[in-house]
Amino acid sequence: MNIETKCLHAGYTPKNTEPRVVPIVQSTTYVYDSTDDVAAVFDDPTISLIYSRFENPTVMAVEKKIAALEGGVGAMCTSSGQAASLLSLLNILKAGDSFISTTAIYGGTINLFAVTLPRMGIECIFVSPDATEEELNATFKPNTRAVFGETIANPALTVFDIEKFAKAAHAHGVPLIVDNTFPTPILCRPIEFGADIVTHSTSKYMDGHAVQVGGVIVDSGNFDWTNGKFPEFTEPDESYHGTIYTKAYGKAAYIVKARMQLMRDFGCYPSAQSAFYLNLGLETLAVRMKQYCENAMTVARFLEAHEKVESVNYPGLESNPYHELAKKYLPLGCSGVISFVIKGGRSAAVRFMDSLKLASNEVHVADIRTCVLHPASATHRQLTDEQLVAAGINGGMVRFSVGLESIDDILEDLKAGLAAV
Ligand SMILES: *Cc1c(COP(=O)(O)O)cnc(C)c1O
Image (cartoon, rainbow, N blue to C red; front, side, top):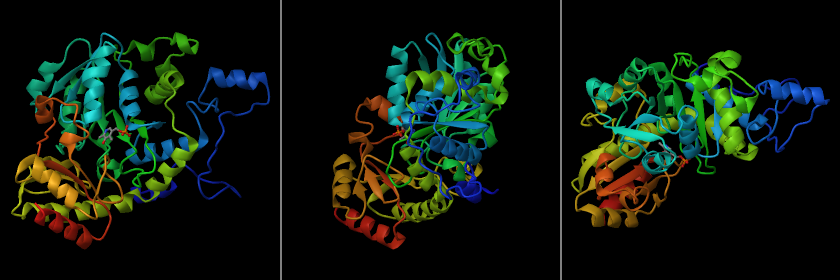
């Protein structure tokens, strides 16, 4: 199946007389014929369902669809994108370990990496997304066990050189985790460029309609956990009566461990109802992503030519420093988020935003409706000036998430907003 078809059909194939649409299985529990059947499920939790804290048929249909879209061997949904980032790392790291992340990542992820994980004894070593291969290689420590980056950073909009980071990670025997929220698998599939694990905030384009918060972790199945650096995959898990994940689950060791160990213990699994909404969004993902790219490109060109705009950041523009990487990793388009700096700094940006009629002020991006945000006073409010600069944010910067309204109406709104500055 091509990806447009997978959006509609992967993950759920109804049999004779079964519902056409993925059913909402709103049940915490599942029944068994005998205690022996229950025992068998506890011996191998992948043969049947146990409990909706970590397994549910509606959610699992969506997990299969997303795994198919990204080209992975399995996926696990989480109750938020933050939970996906957290569990993707905790499945590999423990107190005393370190991992490497680029500085160009989502503000919430920066808090998690710079403040909360260190409290748990896990160190994040930050590197520039533009680090050379030599600089990258010099960053690894003996206890470094993963590398993390965002395909298109929110909101810096830098394009992550997946192959470069994958090469460095693999040279040091550790996996590369890529947050692919902004492109979605329609515009980029990081696994094809060497990523081992892919995460998403499904709250953004995948859901697309701003109706539910969620996340997902996808396992490529490609990483060799038996290379000697990851005993928790190759030695018996005492919390799961001695299961050796690489032996029992082969290529799916990572994602089965994430579910049976971490989801069991942390319990941040989405509800069947949330998964149902997410699935509706995924069904139209391919169509929507192409239209977002087209509208965003038109808006970016309009802003670039406008006298009141100091600079426009959109990797689809030829003038953008990440344009070459965008051509390589995002040949179909650079998704729907643009950031730009209005002449006159912070106050001009605020005046512009408050003059918009169609675009709404939202702490969100990737909505089907056009929305706008001032990162310095919202999502990135907690960052120091130094961290703001490292994350690529200017006080006069506006983050503009282009929606699927008529492009003429979006441009009218922008013209009126800029006229008010
Ligand atoms: C929003 C976002 C997250 C966090 O996801 P939530 O669903 O809000 O928890 C992580 N990464 C990126 C790139 C995001 O845009």
